[in-house]
Length: 393
Ligand SMILES: *Cc1c(COP(=O)(O)O)cnc(C)c1O
Image (tube, rainbow, N blue to C red; front, side, top):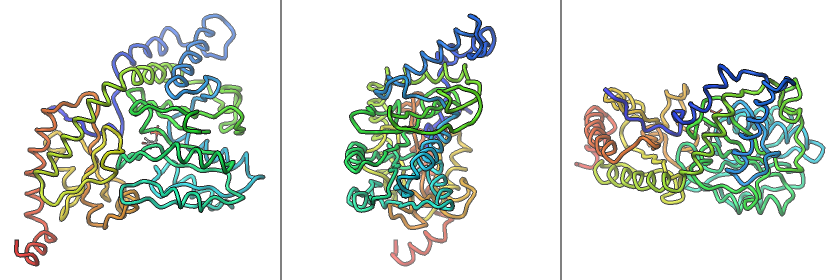
């Protein structure tokens, strides 16, 4: 049975063209970019090419791109780096309540170490409150870190508005753009972004490489202490094959973004429409229009997301949920709770994220399977029994 993959927000496959460009750097072209002979110097050049490819994708200069080992590291560096480098200016950080754990847990770590963090609320669509942001800025605020687009509900934040507010207040602005880069157009200058995190494996590149954009003039201290790599700020022999793949993937994603995102958006809307029309007691989570072109997040009353995932998996469908067990904790997704969902609805949610391989036929197959799965689970659900009794359905 073939897998039908609807979990592109979790990771994407490395595109074969990208892999082909990476392969020689594992075998023939294995030189260390720090070595002085010509054989290895070529590998220094390919790092520069990749740096340029990443920079171009977000409207930055290549000198402003520093490679990391993924999005989590880029988020850690941005936040811990500003905290350390700007602590003489203040100890207050503003973030949102719906960030990825790479941001939230880093902020929580700083709170235990003398920093003060404000977690901004979001509205029922998952949009950060601009008024709350303006009110939260104080004399000792050094950083605003708010994600570009949410990985669970897909909502895209008013990034430019936030950038302008940060700029006017003289506060640095970091955005976790891991879900957005390669999917929606991004320009760091136009949006007044000072720091931006990217990950290769969310845009058809390999797992591992990532980058932090650090705007010229922003002084961040070294994050990994070691050799002089990455402008002496992120030591360690560069992941040459990974970075080559990252560069190739981001260039490719940017090139096809307009057509591919438009295609996925049509599929996404079709998926949402079909599910809401054919499955009773279902509701869309996240902003209805201002959302990632590939994200659908839907809650189903009276049932567990976890059970839906298992039954979908038995039929070859890969998806995610905001339910408890997947994350290994009893609490449902902090994002779904932040947009005001009740615990039961948050537990009964499915995240479907589309990608290059998906077709309309797959969505039809999925919807057909889902209708039956939801009906079966509801038959077994005491919550649904109660509801029927109380409402005489
Ligand atoms: C996947 C993801 C990350 C983490 O990136 P890794 O490269 O897997 O470490 C961070 N933020 C968001 C929004 C993500 O979706």
